[in-house]
Length: 254
Image 1 (cartoon, helix red, strand yellow):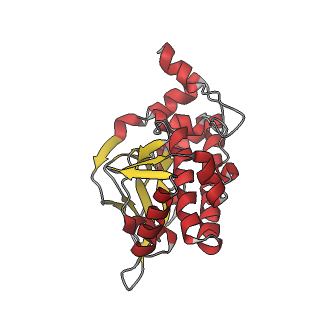
Image 2: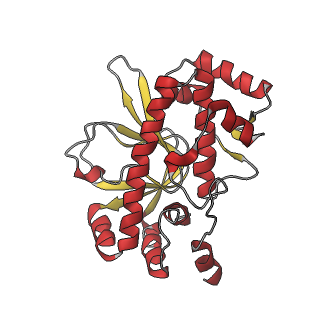
Image 3: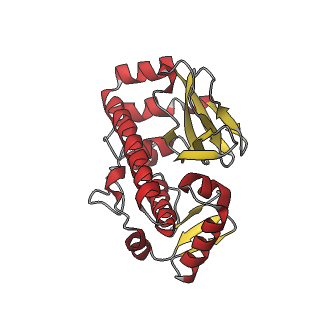
């Protein structure tokens, strides 16, 4: 499962066998975390960087009135916050959505990795920049798109991010999110989410059954919400000109 990280990072840099071996060395430090569990809370002192190898997690804040705002979703291969250990204390929470396989990487291990493997360092910097780009796009989503377009845009984004790490089959992917999760992400109500899902089904753009989302017509859904994947800066996908997956040859040879 650690290859989810390698697949993601090799969208930014092509690694050597030594680079991939160094990244796979994180695997022994994995742990299983149940759904709806906080990995770290606002006010805590961060010590480790959390890497999601399997499952879904999110970054969120709770307002004084109890309202939740989700600011990011994490899928396999995602660092929850690569530079979080620099902070004196957390200003947000990170929690799981589904059961997750998580790696807690000590700061020293990150420092050593970046000191010894320049290609990995460059790819990690790309990751940090893409995280900022995703946040910008989410701000545009909430501020400028209609409710139905916001949700369709999220579905397209998740399709591409999950496809990149090998978690999509025939345009279908696991979707453990509740309507409240989506509402807390999009700044909408549960009623608006339910209405939009019904409309997307009526238009035969999606199906959502047994917590699996299937996009029936990717091009139409992209057109529906004006989705442009350029902010993800991914090269090894069907939506770009570069489809090589060098890491796969290592696995086959090994």
